[in-house]
Image (cartoon, rainbow, N blue to C red):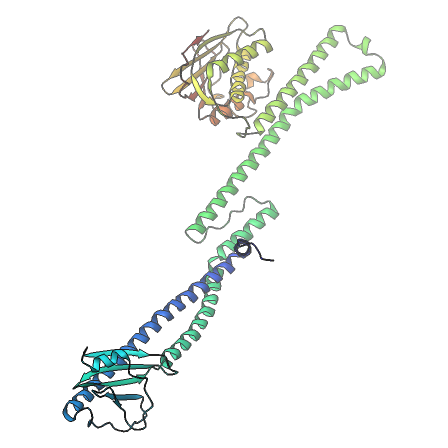
Length: 477
């Protein structure tokens, strides 16, 4: 049963991917050296073979000219041919009738070729040809002499090339082995920073110690990798510190309402057990106590919701949309009126388009209006203005309250921060922090100032977006 053609390459690819980086570098180094040695051997063998052949051909031409000169003086039939000396040099005289003369004791040469016969007949001056048909190959040079020709030949000896090839093979194997060792050493040395980096990362994972930075060593890619991991550790440290602060602040803020809620409930339980619940507390006291319990539960619910929203950070599954910020402000104002009907909200809105997350922006605007509603007197409305200023959407929420002290202004957007004058008012101190987080996530800026009415002026500046086609500007009041 035959295997699919593509299975073997895929299997080889999977095997290669499972190898360690050291093994890959070692194999690559050994393979590169092997290929280099093979190519060098091929080139050197060709050059050596060409050089030897050229030397033999030049020697054959020189010997043939000497023999042709002797034949020209003595004649082809009478030119002396000394007995074969066994040196590998072979000679032959081709007479005009096509017969040949050879020295005594000389090994037989291959028959005169057709091309060599034409040289003897005067068709050309000379001819260099090789004959590999026999067990021993011959390189034969034919030169026109008198009415015939003389031939000088030599056995083609491949032993120098073969010996050279064997030597190159041995050297190549040694180079491959040496290359593998060098590649292994280079891989071990080059990957030493990676090993130390891995050990440091494992140590951080086991000890959970994010304060231990990895030593910056090496250069190039290794240094950039170490710096990136140190930056990641710094971000994790900041995140863990922020989580710890959030948990500590949340525990502190939850302590007061939970304590009050627990004491009131314990009082009701104790009176109920004694059977004096109806007599110990007047109707007015019971009503006030129940109202306090309801307010504390509502405060805890609000605090839990704001903590959940704040703990999410900038992570949200909500998609960014192109929206009219005026619609968001009107919806938030309507919700604020329904929650606290006593708040009078005056809107002065201009259609301004932004790119953002609708629910997050709605929550931020609602927090701004709720914050202003807590401070604004009953006979003074909360003024909400929206307009475009250049490439920015400017949202202002203005109340007629006591305003924000200069000492409190830098911290008004901090988590859980509440001014001394706001301690007795309901709230968690998270509303404006959520506003700042949402505004920052949208590339904007939130600031606080004193309004012309003496109260606080909270201003949000968001980058505008190009409105959809065929949308006419509108205003709302």
